Every structure is written in C-alpha cells, then in structure tokens.
Image (cartoon, rainbow, N blue to C red; front, side, top):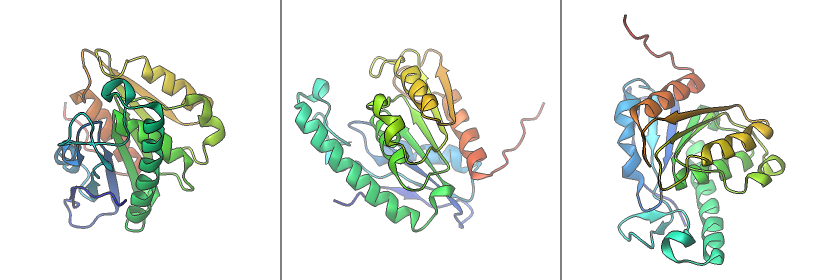
Length: 223
C-alpha cells in the first residue's frame, strides 16, 4: 500500500529541506498542508508533504485513519493492532521514498493527534534520525517500550492544549517523561485554553524548532 497526498514545493523553487505532516484520525493530508503557507513564508527552501493515512476512517469515510481506535469506532483491539502494523509499514515505505529526494537529516516530521502517535512510534525505530519531530495533541504509544526499541533519538517538541477533551493533556508529560528517560532531547509546551487543535503559540514554537533544526535563521522581531 503506497501513501499519497498533497504537497507544496519550496517557495524558492529549490528545496534543501522538507517538513512532512502526519494528520489526525478522520482527517486527510490537506488538513495540515495549509500550515505550509505560514511556515513556508519563513522557510523558503523547504518543501511540504502531507500524505493521507492508508485507510478510510471508520467514523468518517470522507477522511482517513492510521489505524482504528476501539473506544471511538467500536473496532477490536486486534483490529487496532493489525491496522497500526499496516500503517507503520506504509509510513516507513513513504519515508524511504521521500528521503531519497531530501535526506532525513534535512527533514522535520510534524504530527497531529493520531499522526503524533505514528511519528513517535515510527521515527525512533528507523536507522537514521530525522532533524526533529513535532507532536501536537498526541501521545506516546507503549512508553514502556521506547528505551529498548529506540535505534535513533531525534529531538522532539511536544505541544498540547490544556483544554483538550479528545486526548488528555496528561498525555504530554507522560510522553515527555518517557522520551527524556530514553535519552531524547525533549521540549514541551502547553497552550493555555486550547482544545484539540493547534494554537498560534504552538505553531510559532513549531516554526522556531523547525528553523533551528534545519539551520534557518528567522528574522528578529522589531522593537
């Protein structure tokens, strides 16, 4: 199964870096690709890709899911595990193809919700680390397995709204504690009053993190 989805070329016409968005449950690649307008204004040599997850969403057939979520869609735990295994295989194949174009060291992965779960599960288990991982409103699956399973340790920024009713805000410190214990360079931020979404302050931190990891100097704010 090959992942496909929308993408946007570098504003300069020459990409020496890339940001890959991993969308949430029931959404699609276009849901996050819109962020490229704001990020791309400051990262002109960066291309943006947003693959659709491999399965149509059980709860929203217009959108996609990386794997079923039993408490949301009534699927079984076995279905969820099998779906996740398929998604991991598909995402790894997609990343292999994109890294043939732009190196992993010049790549930042930005996940939202279920996309964050995929990013934190897949990226540490690959052979080569990406420049960084940003996880919005997600959680770390099986945190007790991370330290033993991690082959590489890309730096991670976790952002969560303190009013998130879909993925509990407590998921952030749980993931951060496991990442730090496993030796990951880890940064966290809580967006005050934000629900299950991406607030302006979180997106600003994402830009700063991505720019730093891609070696881009951002303009200083005027006084």
